Length: 201
Ligand SMILES: CC(C)(COP(=O)(O)OP(=O)(O)OC[C@H]1O[C@@H](n2cnc3c(N)ncnc32)[C@H](O)[C@@H]1OP(=O)(O)O)[C@@H](O)C(=O)NCCC(=O)NCCS
Image 1 (cartoon, rainbow, N blue to C red):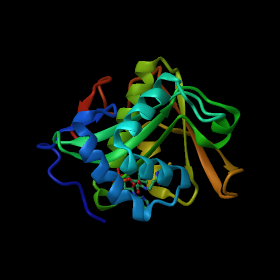
Image 2 (cartoon, protein in one colour):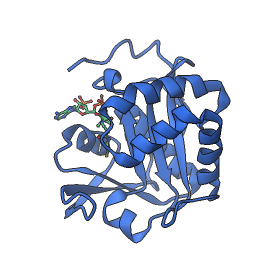
Image 3 (cartoon, helix red, strand yellow):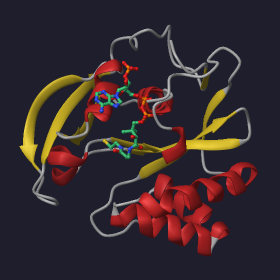
Image 4 (tube, protein in one colour):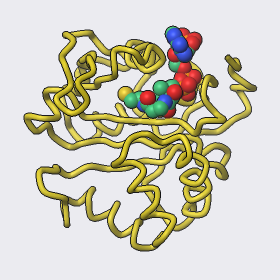
């Protein structure tokens, strides 16, 4: 697996969906689509590629709680931008939990561009999204991963996740690991919230 590149000279920003980085996000969507197995994410990428401006409007609406699909709560999407140019990862932050999210979905989800995996971006996007949850005023966040996704489990643990239990997903039948991150404590290895970061800390 590739190791971290030059971590000192790289700038990472977690940004709200915006016109400035829309083309970079569309390139990200094109790169992710062939390997994307999550039907909801496939639909979001396809919708973005077909109607980029509409996608931005929908993302902003979801964050503000407008035009939510039935059963959905307000949720913010973020793009992880490297050196002001490339979108290398994305994340979602659900502002509160439903019964389904409490059981298995959690507050935060993330993914990394396939060609950029194994370089620390998954950890970075999770860590920065947790800081957004803190800024939103959440006291703790639930993050879950499939039991057969050790990279994601490692990310959650590095970001301060405390394992609670494993449950069977009602959606897929697979086992899911559930972790809580206490936001009343400082983040591990971080002095405090910030919007940009060097990759590793
Ligand atoms: C899971 C995913 C986000 C990981 O992203 P990434 O950028 O490769 O993650 P990182 O480079 O930050 O690595 C995370 C840690 O996992 C470890 N790791 C990677 N593969 C591993 C494996 N097979 N077994 C154990 N640990 C593994 C890495 O070594 C690293 O730990 P370290 O920093 O202590 O060395 C990425 O593979 C992805 O987008 N997958 C598809 C979507 C997904 O599964 N999202 C998570 C939903 S909960």
